[in-house]
Length: 168
Image (tube, rainbow, N blue to C red; front, side, top):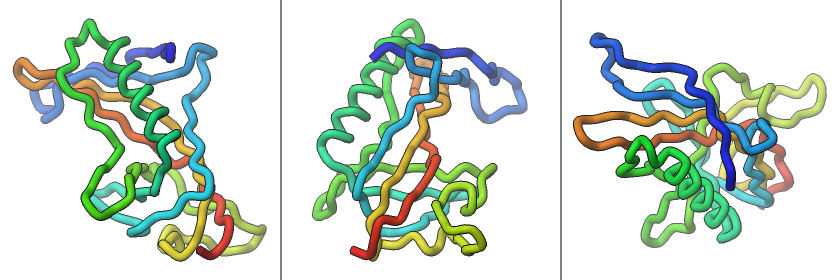
């Protein structure tokens, strides 16, 4: 998988707790990278950490392979940064299906993400384990954190859209 990237921020300020580089990522046609999760569900619904909202989706082996291919491509294309570790969004836990963590952008409201009829009210709290969803995710940027002699690559898969298919 060939990726194109633009460096968009250099965070080397002494007052910043983060030291590293931020990159905007595109596919070879300079388009955003999308992942489509078909007929998926969430086990836990909406989760919050600090000021961020996340949803973990169940995924199949095709998506696992696609995400691993992406992570390997990122590591290869940023080999000049000597990446020691890639923080994966794939979650393996005993007695649970394989999950993929996705982030809800702080810049978007639930009406921007959840498909709905005109006039219908939406809420992230309505996303639960009783429904089946089609979800579109975007890889928008990556961050390479430089910590002493180790370089770690972080990425987020942001939710672009959620379509409720039916009740499980």
